[in-house]
Length: 223
Ligand code: MD6
Ligand code: FE
Image (tube, rainbow, N blue to C red):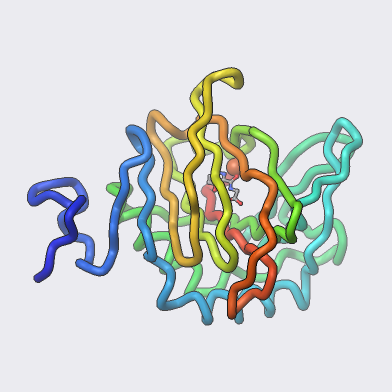
């Protein structure tokens, strides 16, 4: 088996297939480069199916700002924001129906990626899907609304590349800029679970599967 240069023998990531490149981001956080590339067309087909029932929409923050990222969800509960606050809700406030079920290809990706990064038995119950058009950004934030802080978050990037901003446990900690490309999967938990992070304004670019857009799929254990 061919070994990748940054994947030393005996490391935590030894069981990864040789085609994946793993980068440690911080304790508890890793980027699995290209982990979702092969199944990206299936993921995008499943996302089209989800959005035919629960379309992408721009949520309003409790402070009254409309988010530039368009969002939807699948799974047992979905992350929503409105003037009353942030919450996980089993009902889509737009369709007034339960969120579409989480596709099997999503569940498998989430648990395989978590296991590859050292988090065994990850079973997400919520999946937030984010859509970025050129100029869209996601301000520095922490993911704080999940009940189970021991579970990691798994996040897959599809389409045009973006710059991920990775900070620290305090809002004012300095941030690193990390490029994320089509097929990259980020897993974070443990000591990194409440790190501040964001996405810089998306640059004009083109990807054969998503045109000018970037799609991000994040899996959580919310309840
Ligand atoms: C994004 N991701 O990549 C935004 N949050 O579009 C997130 O905000 C995020 O990737 C928690 C864990 C992983 C993430
Ligand atoms: Fe986040």
